[in-house]
Length: 545
Image (cartoon, rainbow, N blue to C red; front, side):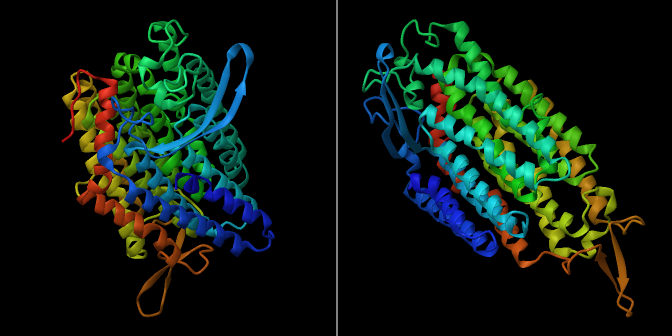
């Protein structure tokens, strides 16, 4: 099932390759069917998954595959390199509670992304081939248990995202695409060096050969004594942790590596902004949880305070920047930076409550920001502007749109009863219960206040009050004393149409349902998170019951 969910979009891309470019509707339908099939397989994976067996490493005397499930492991590249001995790179994939949550999120956002791409008219064939390639790369990263395989999928994301922004983006699309590419490539180069160093430092306990297996790398007993990244090589392990952390932090994005994100979001078409915020940012924090922290637990423990400080900077700085924006899409982009700071704060807590909140925040952030960017796209399609001050009184003329906006805005704000509240609450519970992050958590609470400020202020300016004199739309009278809104070149659409409701309503239901009853997601996470915390801090484990 895992191979199928990863490579199904590639199959769809090959089918699209054979379809004439003029058959735009067939191309769209093939992509949608592939995305829906991914969603069905994700549900089947969720049904087959046993959360009580989850974990990060093998249990004593247990399977050599550890507690991962749905394992697929076969030799991919087998060579005998003479003095270096045999070298095997494996096609090694599997899921635990940490990754299965991201698999489900990726499948969901991919469906939304295809529906959102329905209005793309420019080079439709090339667009959907690249979109499907990106979908495969994202899914592959979340299931890969071989570092080399993970790196291949990680790098594979760069190409389609570069072209999707650079060809289908806004006026400054080339600049934004190149900036995204260079930032991510910079982090990837260091990741490659660490990966090679780890390969020569770790042996597979089953074969006695060097290995790229992340499961083997997570067990300190498998490191060769005296090797460059072995447990006794303190300096090099610190350096490896830092450069690997920077590579993942760029993707988060963490301050000061965040500057590529607002440009990429503003210039990217709406579907790509949805994918970027909904899934790609999570790969940074997922990489930290899957690779960075378990492979260098002692360095992680030494850097908790620093990670927490950067999390607080993200939270407050991102909120301040969002407060200053006049472009609605840029405001949402900076709010995304702020909300990913809560994930970093939860990871810095180094306890199960904080980690659980961080991973749940990753899932919730994916669904909430997808809604936010879709809503920005809806109003831009009609008014051809994203300037907040060009609107006013929209609630009277677009009541359904306003209702969905209220759900998304208040979920992002962290209103109790919506999913954003649960994850942020667990992050703060974990951060306050850890002495090292307690003062950071106290400061970070200000982010909630500033978040409320920019969200409510934008809500008030756009949807409440009266239409402004220089608004992006006009009012027309029907001759009976009633006025109707008229967008410039609005193509006959005012409130949400059927396609837009199909994208937004499921996300709104998920946000409300997981805010009231979060166990469908949190229940999958608990055992894996407890196991991860045990690996990272064997003495000070704070188990979630």
